Image (cartoon, rainbow, N blue to C red):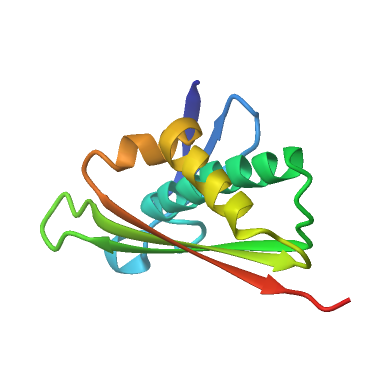
Length: 140
């Protein structure tokens, strides 16, 4: 995997990697940014979420679990001293649908956490990651 960043102005950067999609990265104006894009660690947290969400949704699709909607909420705590790494991350998976079996959800989350999600594997060596889930039945 490769990435390229290009300076725009102040602390605003444009970045793309192998998928060839440009994104904007920026900092808060209080530290010299223009507030024109996501912060680097926000992208890191969203990357973790995307990694595990894609795993879980793919696994549930293969099992033919009837998911009507899905959300993943992430909360991160950071160290107070530099380099201010993530110390704790709480992930809450929320599934919407009728007839969703908890055992299928638990197995999909477990497989993502222990086998498939590279981002989670990298982070959990130094970060406490807690996982919650909720199944919200939709009435049809």
